[in-house]
Length: 261
Image (cartoon, rainbow, N blue to C red; front, top):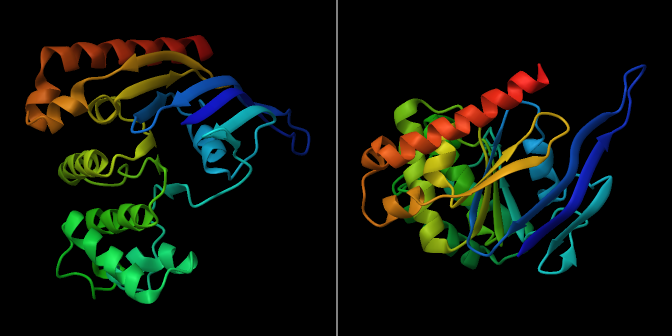
């Protein structure tokens, strides 16, 4: 369980500018196996919140705990998938998948065994010896997701990992991530600018206000479970319930932007 209690972040002033209050008194619990998605207008603190969970950033006040232990920095219990895949371009697919385990000191035979298992999960069989720069954007992002998962983290953190993909590839990637989530049972925290993506993928949605970022709304969502139970993604996204929820969330975000203007 990840617990965030009254976490605030104040970025110090630079030159003659004023300090920036990025987050204020954020309260959030991520239960084991939950898929939590954060939405909000640009500048609402979504990335700052992810960086707090990852341990890249310390809160100015408040606490972050994982299973009761304070989060004081990065750790192998949390893995991040970035907007850009951040792969090693001189390595092939298999070596990239095994790279995190290599850093952990896992023996070569074991780390390559795990990496080959994820080749199948990610639909990358036959590409293990391919340099990653020769892959499509969607395939590169799959390798990035796989590299994070091979390290067997407790929580997978995803910083808009699908934003640069074309529409069709993005939908296929959403479906793949949900199937991996179901199979692996990981907790996931995803930030995105896409309302449709958030509703389709999350089991819980949080909506954040413009700066200073606060969680203003929370929703439990059924749509990912409907897809995993066998309903097609298109049918889920075209359902009256999905459309109504999408309009509700858009209304909240537009209203927040008008208040901040």
